[in-house]
Length: 116
Length: 111
Image (cartoon, rainbow over all chains, first blue to last red; front, side, top):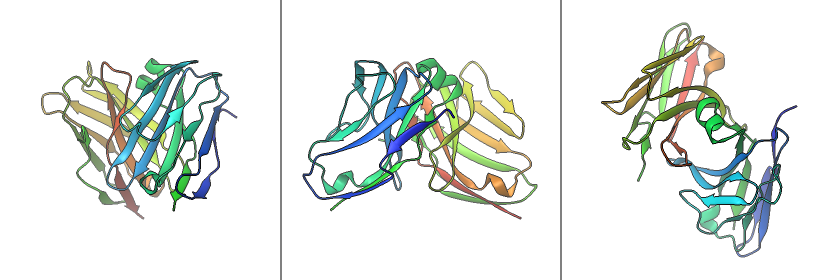
């Protein structure tokens, strides 16, 4: 089944403890992206990647890192999480940027992160 | 600053009637627009898109209208069904590689 898989689905952590949210897609998609969803703010783009080793900042990149060493994986790294990073996170992928424009993303099911 | 706005947080419609969800944008450089649907505990799923060279795109019960001069798009669902109850996000993109999403409208279709 074609899908985007995020892990974990739920995570509670403490301020300052480094964590990684994994994202993997099995569709050979080039374009991948991370979003966070917050009440009243909708979905905001954190980072995106056009292809392997090509990443760029979205609207709200502060406090996050990403890497794209293989086409299928796009992990989101929080080096020193803070309570304002408590949010619902979504990974998404598309065959290409043009695919994302015309046919939309495939989203993962989300990771609910709480930082205390 | 929110470049894509959905000013109605919620909408209730009777089954069989038309649902109209609205979206406004501020950036005149946007030229691709998409609608996504989201159920609780799931990721958004792509619904329909439109490019700025068109003013209408239809897919079954779903039609998206684009008014470039007003920087406004709308999603029409006819007829509305209870299974359409979800949160709907509009999204836009322009010459860059980024997408901008609205805040979402929660649609409830009453049987």
